Each structure stands twice: as C-alpha cells, then as structure tokens.
Image (cartoon, rainbow, N blue to C red; front, side, top):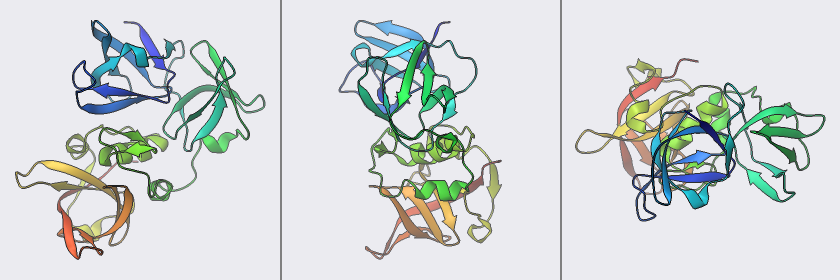
Amino acid sequence: MEKYICENVFVPLRLMPSHRSEMLSQVVFGEKYVIIDEVPGWIKIELEFDGYRGWVDINHLQHSKANQLGPGYVLNRNMACYKPDGTMMVIEAGSEIYEPDFSEKSFRIGENIYKAKGEFTERYISVDESVADTSIRFLNCPYLWGGRIPSGIDCSGFTQLVYKIHGIKIPRDSFLQAESGEPVEFINDARSGDLVFFDNEQGKITHVGMILSKGLVIHASGRVRIDIIDHQGIYRRETGKYSHRLRVIKRMVI
C-alpha cells in the first residue's frame, strides 16, 4: 500500500467526510499515512504514528510519496522554513523531518528539500531535559478539540506531543493512554512525568494531565495550565473547586 507524507503544517482528520463532522485529530507535517478509502472530494487515511483513522478533504492535501524509511526526527520547537517554491511556512513542535543537514540548514520531505530560515542545529531534534521540563514549554498554548500542535491542542494531544518529542509513542486518546504504562497506586507515589487520568460521572476516562512535581499537574483545559492535584483530583485556586476527578495514575516506560 502506497505511503504518503504530509507537507501541510497540519490537516484536520474528521470523523466523517464532511466539514461539519467532528475533528477527531490532525495529521502533522512530516507524518506518514496510507489511504484506506475514498469518496468524491475526500480520502480516509490511517496514520503510521498512532494508527488513527479519519477523513481528509483532498483540497487540504499537500503531500509526497513517502520515500524515507523509518521514523523522522521530531522537532521539539517551532521552526520557520522555506518550501521548495521559495515561500515560507512555520512548522510546529511535533513535526517530523528527514535527512537534516545542519551545515546546509536543510531537510528532506519525500523528494522535496526545505531550507530552514535562521538557526538550524541539533537542538531542534534532540532533548536533554525531562519530560516534565518539555511540557512547560507549551504552557498557555490554547485548547482545541482534536488538536495535536502547540497552536491548538487538546488534553491527550498535549501528553502525546510531549512524549513524542522524547521518542515515546503513546496512543492518541486519553482512555487509550490510560491502558498504557505501569499503574501507580497512590498520588503521593507519583513522579514527575507520570500521567494522571480523570473520569466523568459514568466512569469514562475523559481527561489526562501530567504530573509536574509533587502536588502540581500540567494539562490542557481551556489552555495548557498548571493546577493543584491531590487524591481527589484537580483543584483550581480561582474557583476554589475541583474541576476533574482522579481515576488512575500511569507511569510510561522510558
């Protein structure tokens, strides 16, 4: 099956082939996918990174055949670059690039060569900090249902992005992330970088955050923010109330 590689900053991935349909997720620059179905004006794809499936408007597509083998290098910050036609674009943290050449300030996507605008060093694709420290970079990024990039991100997209930067694949949705990793029994035993999951009145996992340090959680809720967490859940100082009820704690294997 032919693989393609995304050359948009992102492409909305929808539940059904309609712009009125819910945006489930996004295809991010440099990610690979295969086409599994097609109707007039739309294709259904499956992402290589997390196996997510959804519909894409063909008018949104800018892609190449994926000639590169294996995963790309994940950007840990935004980067301005020039497309092959000389126009500029800004690709975001979580994007994947291939065959980076730091002396030429270039990288390859399919058959196309992109040139970085300004600095381009190994610091863009390597991390020497903790998962929690990386998460703080995205503080105040706006919330967007289905979003996976810093300009608009949801709760599970946020945790997936941070772990992706560290070379760790975790599922896209919070309820699937909750099935990964090793359980941590008590909140007092949670470490920086552990994921904490919250349920609704029906007992369904609906939210995820990351332990920042003892008693603090970072999560995407309205924006990426830091709140207090205890054995009950997330406590917001400004309202004096709990906003999310703690269900389970998981430690991702690093």
